[in-house]
Length: 108
Image (cartoon, rainbow, N blue to C red; front, top):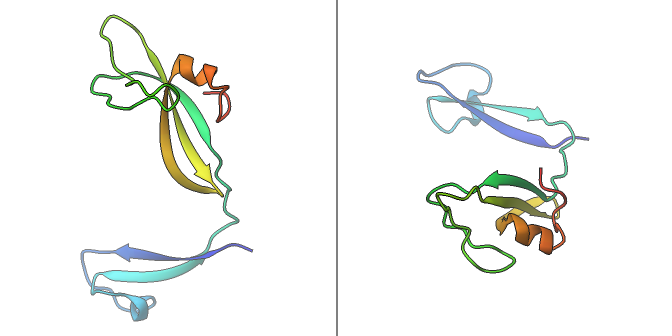
């Protein structure tokens, strides 16, 4: 059975009729819909180039993941989920991610 969510539609004009009884302003219409079974999110990692202005610190070695103009350095960015809920983003040098044993699976 899916979860019921409240969806608020905002309009630049006042509406009348269905949905107005739960609206919080003259420009909202509320509706309730049943969501399909939610996908359980799990931690995952992606491999990306290091871009100028990057100020992340490597989770494995603690050194900054810095852009170097003449080198094509890569980084791994991991979205970390605990109990199906997003909790943080972790950055790694590509080599450090491999050294750490790819804790969030293969980087795509």
